[in-house]
Amino acid sequence: MSIQMMKAAEQKLQQYFGYPTFRPGQAAIIERLFAQQDTLGIMPTGGGKSVCYQVPALLFSGLTIVISPLISLMKDQVDGLNEMGIKATFLNSTLTGEEVVDRMRGLRRGDFRLLYLAPERLEMDSFVRFLGELPLSLVAIDEAHCMSQWGHDFRPSYLSIRSWLQSLPQKPAVLALTATATVDVQQDLMQHLDIAGENTIVTGFGRSNLKLSVRKGIDKAKALEQFLQQRRNEAGIIYASTRKEVEHLYERLSRAGYGVGRYHGGLGEQERTEAQEAFLLDQKLVMVATNAFGMGIDKSNVRYVVHYNLPKNIEAYYQEAGRAGRDGLESECVLYFSPQDTRTQTYFIDQSELAEERKKAEFHKLQQMVTYCHTEQCLQQYILQYFGDQIGDACGQCSNCLDTGEAVDVTREAQMVLSCVKRMRERFGKAIVAQVLGGSSNQKVLEFGLTKLPTYGILKGMTLKDIGLFIDFLIAEQYLKPTDSAYPTLELTAKSVPILKGEEQVFRKIQVQVEQAEPLDDVFEALRECRRALAEENKLPPYMIFSDKTLREMSAYIPLS
Ligand code: ADP
Ligand code: MG
Ligand code: ZN
Image (cartoon, rainbow, N blue to C red; front, side):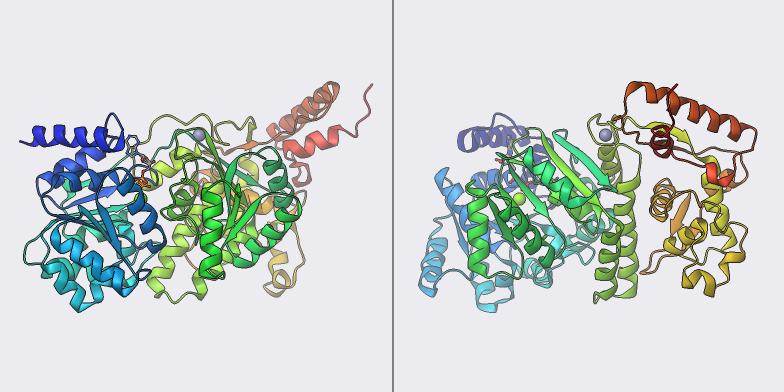
């Protein structure tokens, strides 16, 4: 029976959609729906979630209802289906009363296989009564994370879905779909919709065509310009975290002669729709937007997604970045990191209306996002690990996999930072720890009497910025842990103990700019050798703790003989 149904499903896939086979996950989901099992499908953006309800809709005898928050896209989706010869319609606030009545009549007659709805409709009693009269076979809840308070896009109207489902005289099969795979959201949905573990299908978050990279310590404006210059004829999205920043980038890029569109919540409905259309039709190749843009957008040829600012968490990041390369062709996802952005996101969370408990969870997720920017692990693997997906080999193409930097022993520097944190009794945040290490006589440092600490000024040879980045690295590698709060203080971890005791070493990849002429490399090598020798004899004074980069810069001043 089930095999026959699956054969029929594949046949519909070929006949209507023109795809030879199902993608991973699709068949597993459809099979369960045929068996009347309520199912949760978690697939990344672009993974092919729509087919999971569109194909069954063609085979079930009754109507399939698709609940989606994306009113602006319903028309396109329905038009697309109609073009393929699949009878579908939608009901939302964009229609006139007459159109609604007309479509309801059609639904009563059984003219449609699929009906797209916004969840708000389910809050209208008369409409719910109307739905009760229709033979429903399947209810698909798209963007189902909107139902979870833990999701990054909670919508109260989604809560009405559950009571509506419970009120139905004949229970249809239910399919919840989302690209958000964090454990808390997943469990929330399973519980909310009473979905069994074996009916929760999580598939392939790995996107082998995406080249992930993180760039830090750069001039972002310059980096963006260089990046775009190389991609003049390609479509891409640039995400910024505030409307102001979007406006700013939009102005600058327009002036520089790029075909740019902009999109954010502060613009009128019409302006947004126009910008979206122009982008979809390749009339404007670059879209500068806040995270208000993109959900549900199916533009296949987005070749890059740049995050000009840090997103609030990995879910949000991967969903946005995942809008690149839906056609499976190689695409780039670049994230520009600057510490200021961490503060902005911290501020957003702190100022939000969230309960304390939720805030703490959000701070924690933000920290995991920051860690993404400082880890030396393969970025693709980091993300898969975050989502609880299977981790394969390193991707070989992310900025960490391609990092040619040399692993340098930074155990001594790490010890200095960790012991400083310890001496400060784990009561201070990153900025002030960096100031103490760097020997800054900042007011706060003086106020707390921190100049008396033996670790005061112990890393004087480094800039405060470099010390900050080094601390970020130690956090990413879990030698330090910031507390989950708006003003995180740094704490030691289980991993830091063996470092302080000198039982284990810490290595860090240091980027070496290879711009110098050949002979200077010898000088550089000699300096490094000198450093190594001194370190071995324990004679390395604090001011001699140079990064390779500093050594290389120094080597440029030494006369060649
Ligand atoms: P999602 O909703 O998961 O983000 P979509 O349902 O919009 O993704 O599908 C993304 C793209 O993948 C679409 O262009 C779709 O036509 C395509 N697609 C879906 N299923 C298949 C399949 N079995 N084979 C090939 N392409 C597919
Ligand atoms: Mg979708
Ligand atoms: Zn990698």
